[in-house]
Length: 218
Length: 252
Image (cartoon, rainbow over all chains, first blue to last red; front, side):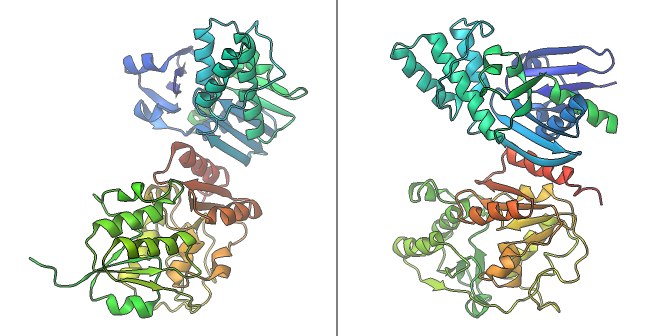
């Protein structure tokens, strides 16, 4: 019986193995509540966990558990970074993690949605993209578009496409891959990858599944 | 109270005929971290300067040295040669510019030992100031007779030693650090030597030209290339941990 936690930059995902309960709360609330997990991963995990598992290992283990294929590539687009693992027959074929080029992209998209009160489920993707080297620089470009008279929805759609194109390039432009993290729930983002690329969302608990695998392995 | 011996700084791996006669002095390896030193290099060097060159300049400016010996031979980079030029202008002390092109290997028993990696690096670096007795192994240092290491780390000494704690004991030391123990810092053939079948991390300081060859060797040997600017970041730490784990480095 254990509390597993993925303490991300902005969101915390918890799984209580005793009750099976899963919940998501803002990391600031997890901090205020003084939560302490038995096994944890994520940007803030070392402060609040008895045992820490690094994010790439959790992502790989979680992917193994959820996907169940001999070869897969799973990318996690988080609030502040982008990371991926490509596993082949239980071995690591490739991986990377960027906290610079992919910095704050997910967080920025979330902020923009709230600020403009945008329904990402109803926003159409754009064929054009903003060159998003990081969230902050991408936002500068986005506001430039708005000032030029481009409608906000279209500007944000270009921004989302920029993030998606960046993430796709970062993972080596595969024709199919699995997506982990909060962006799985962003329909605009999910539809902003290049045409023909098969993106399978795994949801927000992939790293937590990896923790469960670690727990099972002892 | 005055100092009884002169305080001499050195950078890189100067030839023994230059360093040896100075061992009676207080020798300080300027490549190494000296706690409390002010970072004056920030205003003097471009932002794209590697952490070790920055550190050498910080130490040189702060430590009240009476002489500096710099290896600026084939084993070093243009930045080291530029730094020697810069120090000549900044400091009113002798700057001894040397080139260490020796090919007579002193052996690599520390690189190939079963010691914890951090201890290996400490011993190799300390060996420049306090050399060990000559090793019976004086070959090319290419791992003759070494039992299978669990992993290997290729590269130069890191600015942040915490990287070494990520590796299992007995991790083999490769690259320029191996050349350093062998006292052949310009031995390109030895620097390029990588044993097959060992999970190897290829490390260079961010902005160091050695990243070109580190990336190339990582592809060639199916290893992991990382570059670090000063302190080890969480992503780089995680990549090394995951690489070692999924390549079975901890299975032994």
